[in-house]
Image 1 (cartoon, rainbow, N blue to C red):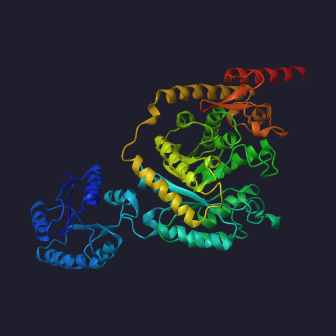
Image 2 (spheres, rainbow, N blue to C red):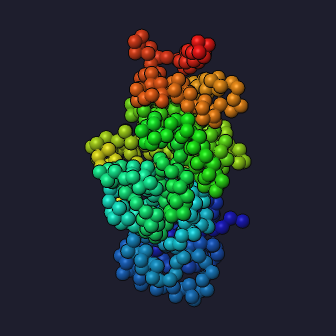
Image 3 (cartoon, rainbow, N blue to C red):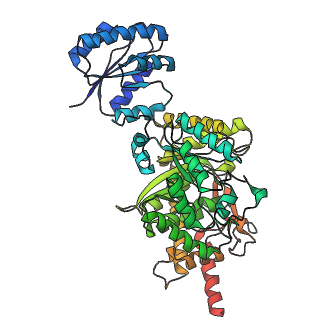
Length: 550
């Protein structure tokens, strides 16, 4: 038997939009509903309650708090008179009225509209959200399951001053807008936290300088308020296992973000050679998998940010997930960075993501679960802050087409300055408004014919790349997870990017061009797109000739 909710605006209040919206949400969660309309007298409300015997009664009042206090005094006396204490009472209204409602002692929950629909849905699902760490959920999978289809919201944060960062985390947590704070440490922290070979001239470059485990713990302690956001931190580029353990012990690292082929001589973020770093990165994935810590493999967007064409992005998405699964990861967070390169059109961007999703999620089984994480590309943010807010909203709207479990907000100010707590709070609120609107019903862009056509092209092209990697080492039982084979694929150019030109560990021969919103491998000398079969075939042929000559 369905549970019944009765709701009304009471006495002289004729505002009903909030009540009506609440009942629609309740109906979508499986409740029977009865809407009593505007300006419902308390005695009429009580009469219907006695007749219908609802499970929950919701009342709303949006006029002056002084008037509400006397109305609630009458309601309280009626509840006592007719023994209606067994009913669950809830209240919705303005923030000042919600304070009065709380003080009355009648209501088990009040809704002032600042926490969004996800708060309401959590309540209706029986997941009453209290100011308690356990109630908010302290692992990412739990948070996702409590909120979906609303995505968990993440933003990175790290100012050049540790003191300002500490205060900022306190402010962000208190605002209850962010589920995950990704601590952005400076490069000195990532590379020299353990060997202490800091270049002091670079302190605060790219993030917050953190110089001790105690400073990490303080950041975590300041986040234990508000909605108790999860904390996570970028991985180290040196002493990666020591860093992983330290992050687990100090901030309860919500999940690890580990590259497959990067954080080495390819991107100049560490001294490791490519093959060595792939092997070590795989072991780091396994370290986290053994401790049941979710893993995100930052791979595809590293190629995209360096202007690799779309097919490489899709193939790299699969390689990242494949290697995570191979290392025993159970909960995998697949990041999909939109707007990379910035000239990509929304249609072609979505096609690239859908192709990546189809390949990545083909790996799912009982022991490997994929969670989608969407975000905007930083390079797509204009320097003009008003235009940037438009880009932030636009990218978030398109991203919701893939139904993400996590939305990684990129602050609108990031192309202009490092995000302050106020910038982050504003950016998150913009995105939350977009999400709220899309979940009320949006056009299904994934069924657009141009999108579907491009998606299939990219799936086929990505398979050509993956098969090309396999052909490099036919004696290996699993070339796609073999560090030597993968590093060879980079050296020969099967995996390549224009920005790698001149890098001794890569080919750097690839040239690309955005045509009609999609990024292709391109032959500028002959002014033509290079088909993926041709590109990979030529690389394999040249490699085989080299072997014969040798």
